[in-house]
Length: 119
Image (cartoon, rainbow, N blue to C red; front, side, top):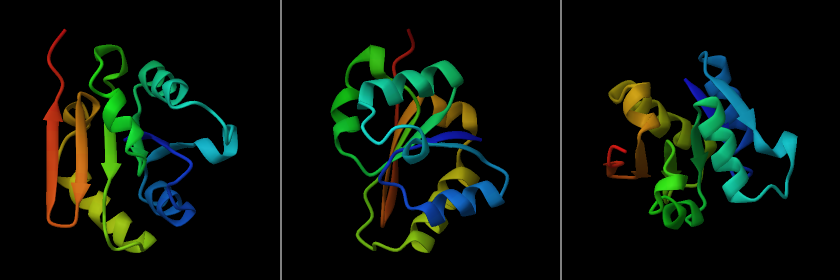
């Protein structure tokens, strides 16, 4: 799958995802001050899923023009390997086509998928 990793995604998570064959754009390598709306535009233009811990994306996803695939990681255990294993569960359970058209909230005890309305 193709992802955009927000600046708050651990380097270890990015490396593990790449090692397992995923394509990631690391925002830390592009521009540390890039606005969230520009990250959304990049994801939309390149058909990528945003990986983030940033709750601001939850608010933006309410507006149709910002509805791109997003996985918002809201885990209480702050450990990169744990985050990777939880992400792996999501990626094994849901197809890329579903994740590209949904807001996914990843919690310790649940995976919440909110499919965007069809245009």
